Amino acid sequence: MARIMIFGGHGKVALLLEPLLVAQGHTVTGVIRNPAHEREVAATGAQPLVADVETLDLDQFTNLVAGNDVIVWSAGAGGGNPARTYAVDRDAAIRTMDAATAAGVLRYVMVSWIGSRADHGVNPGDSFFPYADAKWAADAHLSQSTLDWTILAPGTLTLEPPTGRITVDPAGRGEVSRADVAAVIAAAIADDSTIGRTIRFGGGGESIGHAIAG
Image 1 (cartoon, rainbow, N blue to C red):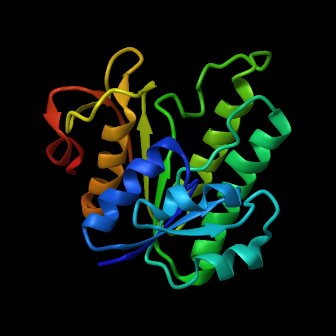
Image 2: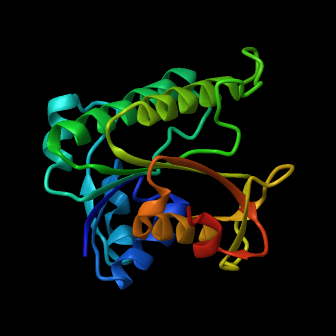
């Protein structure tokens, strides 16, 4: 069983992921910014840890992640403030990757979005551009690292119940439930064939384990 640290531990996907991992016997830490969210994270069986990723430097991140086996980045600024989007979705994410390397935490799973690529096509004048730009920068940094990385890139997230089934490289918006995204993350952690791969997916008809297998 592994020690798994989830950044963005109070996010909608993370709150669904944490009990899945705990049920599998893993020791899970959910990193959160707001102390008011500790109780909800603890209710999943994960251990809440309060830290503001926007303010931590590389040494602080290295100390934070040391001793874990897997890092899951599911944090985000939530849009609305371009400076904060870059500070969290790009800069803090990259610092955790560098910290993981420094601390010897090799396994790193990034939760990205289906359109994250160099030619994402978002106009610089679009309010969505900072997010697209920041996420691609973080994904690119991770893919060039020496970590055992996996980038999971779901389509439009919904609140539908889980189906346990997805489609890889879907056409269109690739709508998928957050519950299925959580299940994909858990499956990717357990499947070393996902290392070194970017997996773009949406809802579909193929079982998650079969769909993501290399």
